[in-house]
Amino acid sequence: MAPMRTAKPVKTREIELGDRLGTEQELAQLATLRNLSTESLLLAQNAGLLRFGRWKGLPAWFVIDEPAKVAQARRMDGKEWISTDPKKEPFKSWTICSPGNGSWPLGASFIGNRSIVAFCEGGPDALAAYHFAYCERVENSVVVVCMLGTGMKQIHEKALPLFRGKFVRLFLDCDNSGLRAGVGWAAQLKQVGATVDWFDLSGLRKTNDKPAKDLNDICSVDADDFEQRRDLWNLMEVENG
Image 1 (tube, rainbow, N blue to C red):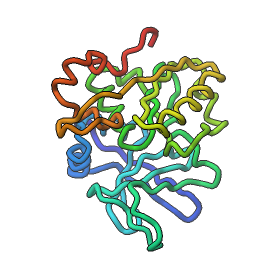
Image 2 (image 1 turned 135 degrees about the vertical axis):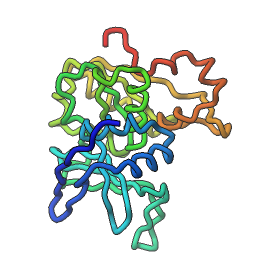
Image 3 (image 1 turned 135 degrees about the horizontal axis):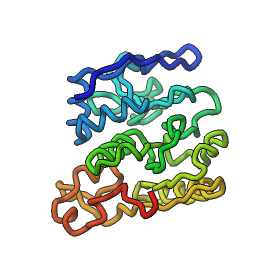
């Protein structure tokens, strides 16, 4: 296991969060919760995308982009957040960001000279992308980026130049909102000179026989589906990557 290192806190107005990396126990807990390898979580930490801490008084894990001051928190126990407003339904993730930065793709600040961008929606899929990059031994050429939700119809204009000349593979949720958002994101990325394709996750089943709806679900894909779908063996493989 790679050594722990100190992380800087992220401040958004009066909010301070993501001030540390995970303990071995926290990494193991999150790996079990999301059916991921602890090695891939270490990759996400070292990339600057994953942090741990507390939010609203509860242990939480964060996907985060420190330079852009954007983060999204999920509970470590896997349960939903409960709003103080009784009229609002419980929700899975809590977005924290500076005004106007909600459409920033987390991880875009760290693209640098990486040639392949795995472009996801939501924190669990971002961690799953690092899991598959680790399993396929392409972690040195792949960087993971994620939007905070399909409601973010447009990628932040200041982030777009960071994708110029990159190969971007979209991993879209298997629903209408995911497909609609993906079409818009792809169009924006192509306009700045990125090469874009997307991976089709439809038609796959999890081990509980429920349909796989997103990239994180592929970590629990049925063995027969995995055997038949050879494209699952190399999710990050690109022709010119």
